[in-house]
Image 1: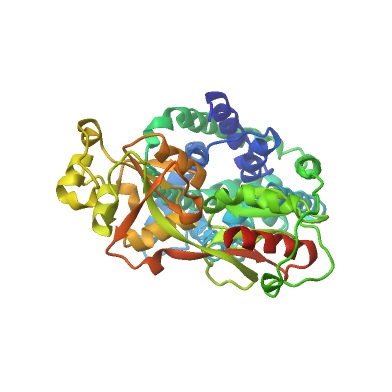
Image 2: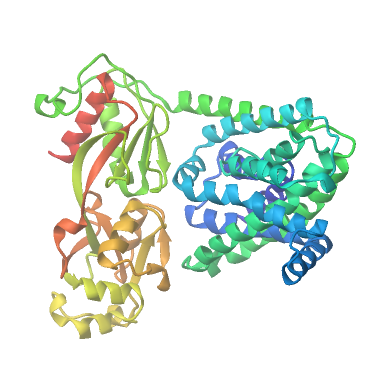
Amino acid sequence: MTLLQSIILGIIQGLTEFLPISSSAHLVLVPYIFNWNLPESQIFPFDVLVQIGTLVAVIIYFWKDLIIILKAFFRGLVERKPFDEPNARLGWYLILATIPAGLAGVLLKSKVEAAFNNPRLTAYFLIITAVMLLAAEFFSRRSRSLVDLKWYDALWIGIFQAISIFPGVSRSGSTITGGMTRHFDRPSAARFSFLMSIPVMIAAGGMSLLDLLEVPDLGAFLPVLAIGFIAALLVGYLSIHWLLSFLKKRSLVYFSAYCALLAITVIIIGNVRSETNQSPAVFTSTQTQSLAANITELPQASVTNIEYTASLDWMLPAMTSCANATKDFSIVTHLVPGSQFTPSEGAILLRWGEPPNLIEYSTQLGINQLKVVVNPSNPVDSLSSDLIRQISHKELSSWSEVYQNCPDCFASNLGTELGATSPGFNFYLVGEEIQDLFDRVLMANAPVSRASSTLIPSTLSMRDAVSNSPSQIGFLPSGAIDTTVKPVTITGIEEDSLTLPILAISKEKPQGSTAEWLICLQQSLNP
């Protein structure tokens, strides 16, 4: 991420967090529209920092209100009269309004994470925001102020806040809509919306900050991301002030129109790119009947969206080759996070390992085993699971120490230069299935983040990182290994525990050309 990109996205977060146009949508859609290839290892830390920036902005803006509410709240508890003072009741109402969003975040976490990686789905959610803002304007009498707030009003607005966990559904837009459907005037609905955002943002920011502190090599790109934090804070403060003044005299219709226009623009861009990326395929393949028994042969169906996780990016050449060998069939591939367990509508999801609570149709294309790999010039040829854990946690500071702990693990003596270097253990992003398998089996669920390491976005990047330096060590699915890296025998662990199936998951049973394409993939994985 460049300094300019950080500033732009920080400004966008500051503007859109409080304006009813969805900050999460803009953080997804702006890089998509401008085709920015942002490093995945930096996206999560950046999102955390800019969201904390807007949290600081809203706390500073409402500092006096918060002090008054907190004093009244705790005074009511001490005096055993928790609901006597209006400001004490407001404190309880803010807590009550937070509960629905908290429950929604826990129950819908995986679906929300998947939605954050789907720009077109985000655009459709943005249309929902546009509709809600129109409904707020046309169905609200705007006859109540904040002093009229009751507990059931707070709960109702909290339910609207729960809806906003999906990217594209504006948190401020949905909560202002919730307030206005209870007939509060615009400034009162907006004020309560901003106040009730603070508990949710503190909880979400606190949890994310813990994860952020575990990101290896954070200091390397923190200065660039910090600029985004400052931009989000300053612009966020100004946008709160501007919106409260704007809503005293003007309508939400302007924001509704903007959301609809942005959503339509993204959908059009997505359709144009899909058509551009599709190319006609030439029929050259023949079906294998034994494999076809696993996938039905019915009338041909063209599949354009193939979603795959970073653990399977090494399969891209086979995906393309099989598409070219399948009549009337072409694909558009999309890299998705390992936390995405279900395919998008009309798509096929390729992932390594069965996701929890799998209810969709799935086909096993093959199996792969996790392998620890090193540079071919490194003489190590075996490692115990205990040694792997020690290396990953930097308990062994050099390859010489590894050799001293297990000289039989090496085919020959270490050279002086390699022996003096530190083993550079590389890890994948949190949530990728290959990283989860490594953590669960080889690390016995011990956090790998204790090590100072480099986060690798995909298996191809892992292969490149290991092949470029004799001191590097990493892990790959067996299918991703080529002559540029050397697999290391892992002792002290059952090989079956490191083996997972490669699955093709879809909403419906594959048919026609889709089935033929999957058969081709099966053949390429099982020659």
